[in-house]
Image (tube, rainbow, N blue to C red):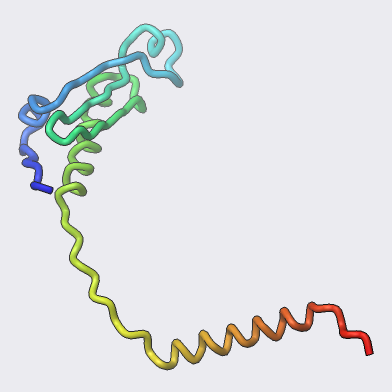
Length: 116
């Protein structure tokens, strides 16, 4: 996937996004019931969505939402280095076999004794 350009300023990033406001739930009483303080930002090029309704003001929710969106875009751009498989050491294989045999012995002891 092609890396997504992340602008430095919030205004440039908001130009690439759709911003929706809504009435959020939670604490705040009448204030939160009559103001649209919840913010949902959709980044058009990538389709990523960030939602914030934690704060009582739309301004703070928008700031928090932009931080979340930036973090998600950076994570999307980050390319994980390929994992180089390593051989399992002999000591680890031996310990695994020993623990398996101990588990097998425990399970055999749980069986009903054979009638003589």
